Image: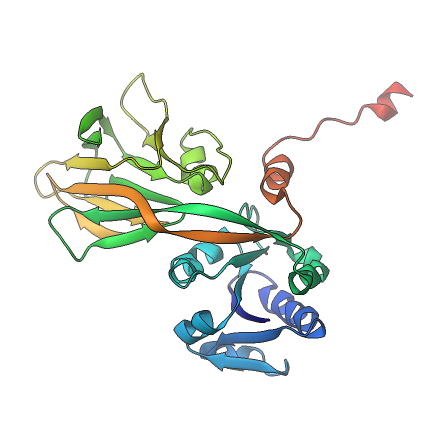
Length: 291
């Protein structure tokens, strides 16, 4: 088995965790590939194979992203294009997509033994209507929001040609079930089981008494039309990255991507464990008070 390690060295102690992961993987007979740019960062780790990113992804059997959810997002599109599963090791604060915490690296042995399951995640495709070169793919979400030169904007949202909402707001979020625990949740959207195939629509700070999220079927075709004042703009964000600057009258089309991402889940039920551990307040232990 051959894996491609994708570390985020800006995370605290990520270099140390990556070195530890290499030792566990090598002890299991798993070959390790990394990008050439990391050669100087791991001079004392023997047996690593270095190459460019596309070669690493095309030749590996699985991608191991060491960092947080953002690290998984960075490699998700390339991994989905090459149909390679991704295993996340969390070095950050939340890490809902990660199967392992940095304290559980010994469980990487399950990868070599085939003791894991695959969680298939739907992705989104977005494009700016009228621009054939503006095709983008998202694992988490597609966000249309006002830019710094726009105080507030108006948005029209249509599903399969039918009007859904006309609102004045800071923006709109169209997310997958995977992205439901990201920006959408912070904006008041629900948590959705990540294997569900759907498109969630959530408003960002709407000037309205009605601000409920809506869930659309996975085969929906969503159009968002932007209305701004003269010379003002809104931004198209895909998985947290600004990819396009939109003007008054521009339309964004969002639909299900033909590609998907396979997430490796070593322990099983990692998502619900993360939700309970990182979002829910634990019940207070009253045993001592009752003694």
